[in-house]
Amino acid sequence: MRRHITDLAGKDYITHDVDVAIIGSGLAGLYAAYHLPDALSCALFTKSKMQTSSSSLAQGGIAAVTEKDDQFLYHYMDTITAGAGLCDEDAVRLIVREGPSEIETMQKIGTRFDLNGEGRLMTTREGGHGMHRILHAGGDATGQEMVRALEKAVGSKPNVRLHENAFAADVWTCGDRVCGVTVFERNEWHLYRTGHLLIASGGIGQIYRYTTNPVVATADGIAMAARAGAKLKDMEFIQFHPTGLYTPENRNRQCFLISEAMRGEGAILRNQKGQRFMKKAHPLAELAPRDIVSREIYAQIQNQTLPYVRLNIASADPDFLIKRFPTIYHKCLEHGIDITRDDIPVGPVQHYMMGGVQTDLWGSTQIRGLYCCGEAACTGVHGANRLASNSTLECLVFGRRCAQTIAGSAMESPACSAEPVTGENRAIAFDTEALIIELKGIMVKYCGIVRSGEQLRTGLSRVGEIGKMLEKAKLNTIRDMELCNMVTVAAEILRSAIKRRISVGSHYRTDGEAQAND
Ligand code: SIN
Image 1: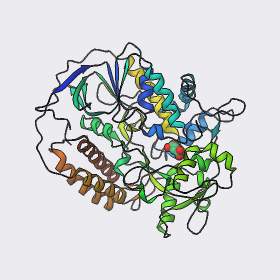
Image 2: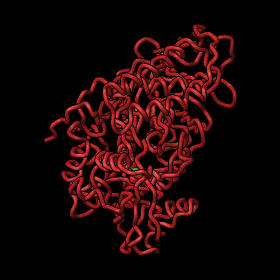
Image 3: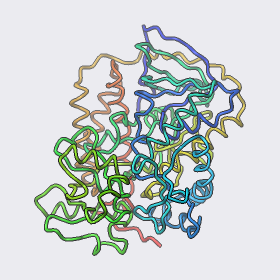
Image 4: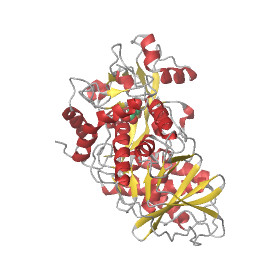
């Protein structure tokens, strides 16, 4: 793996000094920035607009114990069960216990969670949850509302500077610690010298052909951490959401999500023959953990001619549906589907990555001064399959914990001798877009919902060839760098999936024995 994708040989760049740099404007990055003491200068970089993130797209909600009949133990058990026994129990205990106070903080800063007639938080159920514990906002616009409130709160902090359209490329290290990050912004290269760098840059969805992730989800943070020597963990565990809206134009960009909360409110899945198949597949039927519903839909689609199954909630009151799911209602109407009446065509699409940069319970990686939280991190909370709406919760708990870790660390400025000039790359012609499309095809074909050792090795062989070609290539555009990041992470996913020979959680191998899960 190449060490850097930035090579500023012969180019001018501008140097800045900050106490803390954060990459990513989703819930994790913003919540960390919010919790940093005012005495620390902070630059927060996002490669597109502030609201362009998977967090902003989160529909269903955020899981937390708020109902009287719910308990931390129940939330803990549901998380461990969904994670197929591979969760880090301490990490789960921690997010479950710290969840309710993060919700209070979010309310204090102005998040308008949906309330019932008595002014109490409304809750719903989602797959794998035994209780009503999913809070939501704006019906199905929970992420958007949380990001709005946080952006406002962070925007009023004098010590935090928000940088939009700023692409962070490489972590620079001096000895064993972080000393800076290179960023492309306003058509210029910058070196931000800092001793504290937090990667909160989200997931990897764009390496798949079908994903709910926005087009910015190109694995940049995970790849840059790996290049700097940080350890990655559980990369084979990719979550496929059961109900992406099926439309022929979904390919290669972003699929619209039909929230699991819709099944929480009673939506039913039927195959082409009109049979309700989930009842036979699992005692929780449509509300079984996500990996199980996705695999069952996949199996149904293999046995029918239509490339989708049907989701129906038309038996619910139309006024309730329009108010509860306004985003989904309007998006479906754009496609000629009236959810109060019609079936919704759906199928499994890549949605989340359980693995990522390995951290401890305070968000630290193995590299001094490098922290990670949110989807880019592997805190161990999710194990082999994430429980619905635990990701938004994890962003808050670990975003705040990262900020506390940084605040408690010495602010000595590392003697930064980093020069983002390696001079080691050469001009090689390649078609970036064609390679990205090829990569997406490989991942869907060889590393999808169902995989085998042979498929994974075939996938790795071609991804490895592309990676080798890019190893010493001059990367001229941001898109070239994104390609390089996606190829690096795809190879890591394939390698991890080859190594884990058993089927467990979201990693289902046709040639693997199922792991006993007790
Ligand atoms: C959804 O609304 O179904 C997505 C929630 C999640 O990813 O946990």
